[in-house]
Length: 131
Image (cartoon, rainbow, N blue to C red; front, side, top):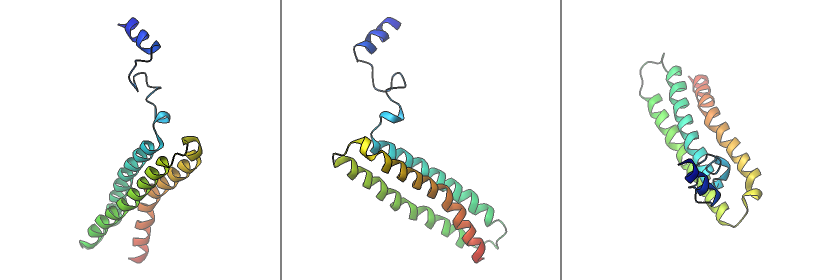
């Protein structure tokens, strides 16, 4: 078995991602990597938004308005993420090399994660100031 695997690797017949190095995040196209970041950032944003908002509204009078606001905030971020994903689909189909887009990719990923982590706290703080 080990000899067969070694031979398959030497002849290039190993499936993508078999040994970990070939299927690593660095070998994925930037479009796929951005999609992965967006999906995880949406999960983090939603989780933080729910957790932080629930803690902030524990002492309120039981109004449904904060819950409605929570749904609106989660629903509002989805089109923005879809727009970012569409942008990366267009960028990668223009024929630009991944090496040329790496700096732009890093900037967009940092902005995405800053928003995903920072917005729930900023919105809850704003809610606290207004209340």
